[in-house]
Image 1: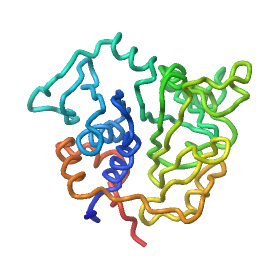
Image 2: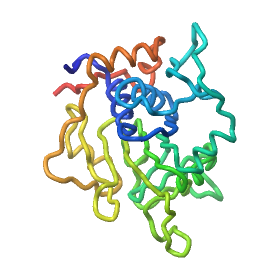
Image 3: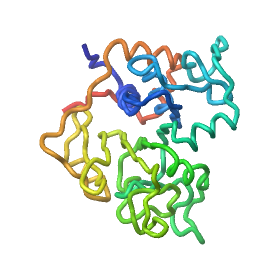
Length: 263
């Protein structure tokens, strides 16, 4: 049974969780609160195989709540850099990250806006994006779906590789390149179209196809009737609220809107 009182943030957490549904015993990494809560929800519901850390240096038996904690979570193993990178470079990790820009090839940017030599804004730098993108599966979270985030042409600075053969050395695709899903505040997309074209998977309740197209800088493929993104059920909502006891999720989207947009 679904809960129509779910917020959009809770819907997005559930949609993020679904990216790890069929993964084996891999490290599930969610960057920023909504993807992190999604990874925890996935482990506590349909995929207990996932490995989860405390975002510091321990593997956890049960995902820890975000924000201030009243107790220390139970650790089931040490997660130093060496063990983390063994999983990362061995392809045993699926990361859900939050780029500032993404293009039709799945290339992402977290480094600069504008020309790299004279940027309009300097951001994080490429960080671990280049190595992550060629080592293990990746998915993306875009909290504000717009043409500024889902851009026409290429991203301003390519931090992670995508399905653009012009960017592959000698035209050879990295053998572990695997882009899975894009979760935004309007819809869920994947790379399941011809030649890895971005394809619409579902529309969030009350969102129309034209709105997605109008706010995307590249063509989004559709195949048949596009389903509605499933609302989180009562069990999922209870888990989300337990994992976020301070209701941090309510501060992440302007106005903390409902999951079901009014007509």
